[in-house]
Image (cartoon, rainbow, N blue to C red):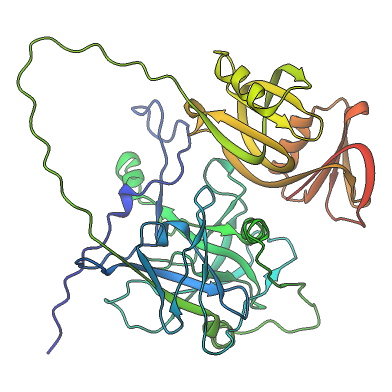
Length: 428
C-alpha cells in the first residue's frame, strides 16, 4: 500500500532573486520585471526543531568544508549534512547566495576540484543533487544538459544559464563538466509569475552561480580549495562514470528550526481622512571590498572613509561612492551600474538603485598587469567603457586599462603577473 505523502512545497514564485527591466513581447506591459525563483528549499511539515526544508551541498576540502546556497541554510537553527554530521554556524555571502558549512567527518571526504579553464557556451554539463526529498527516492539524482548562456538575467555575469532540469532541493548542488570539474552551483529557475505575465511558459530556464564567484567567497573566508586544468589527452567521462566519480562528494542538507508563526493583524477602524504618506529617504547600502562603477561627478582628496560616506549621504544627486583606502580619495557618483571586487575599495550605493546594481565577477587589481593575450585595443576609452566592453565580449577574460593614456586592452588569455604603475587590471 502506498504511503500517504503530505508535502507543503514552497511557492517558488514568491522567492524572487533578481529583477530586470525591459519591455517584453506584449504592449500592455510598459515594463516587465523578470524574477528568478530560488530552488533550494524543499519544504517539509514541521514542528519546533524538526526538518523545515532540504537542499544540497558538496565538499570543497577533504577535512569537512562544504559549499551550498545561502538561501538553503540562512534561516536554520540547526543544519545537518546527512550522513556526515551537524554543521557549525554557516559562513554566509547572501549577496552571491553562497554558504560554507563546516562539519567534522569521521573519515575524509572527497573534495571536488574547481576548473581553471573558462566556461564555453554550449558545452555539456551534469548537475547532481537531492531534489524533492521525501517525495522521490533518497538517492542522489543526476541530470544532463548544456550551458545555454554565459550570463544570467540582465547580463549578470555571476551566473550562467543552464538547461539541466532542476527541482526544489537541487539548490547548492554542483554543476560539473565532462571531466568532473566544478563549473557552477545550482541556484535558481524562472518564476511562474513570469509565465503568467507574458502568457508564455519558459521551458527549462535555469541558472547556476559561476564557480569563480565561489572561489572568491572561499578566499574571503580563508578556506582552501583545489583547482585543476583540463587535459586534452584525458578522454571525457560518460554520464555514468561522472555520477560514480562525483556522487561521494555530494550530500543532502536538512534545515531544522521552528515554523514561522502566523500573526493575526487587527483591522483598523474606519477613518475618513487619509494619513499623509511618509517619505522614506533612500539609505546607503555598504559594499566593502567592492568598487562602485558609475559616473564620477566629484572627487574629494585626503579624507577618511566616514567623511566620504557622509558627503554622499548629504548630497541628493549622489547614488554611490567609492573610497580608495590606498590613496584616501573619495569618488562621488551620480549613477551606479555595477559593483566589481577591489581590495583597495570601500563603497556604498543608494537603496533606490538596489534593483539595478549588478554584482560582477570581475576583480580589479591596481598597478598590475598580466602581459600577453591582447586581441583588441580601445583608444580614448574610459575605465567604465573598458570594463563593460569586456563584460559583453565572451572572448574577453581580462582587461588592462592605462589611465594616463586612456587606453583599454582586452585579453583572451593571461601571461605572468607583474607590477605596472598606472594600470587598472580587471579579471573575470
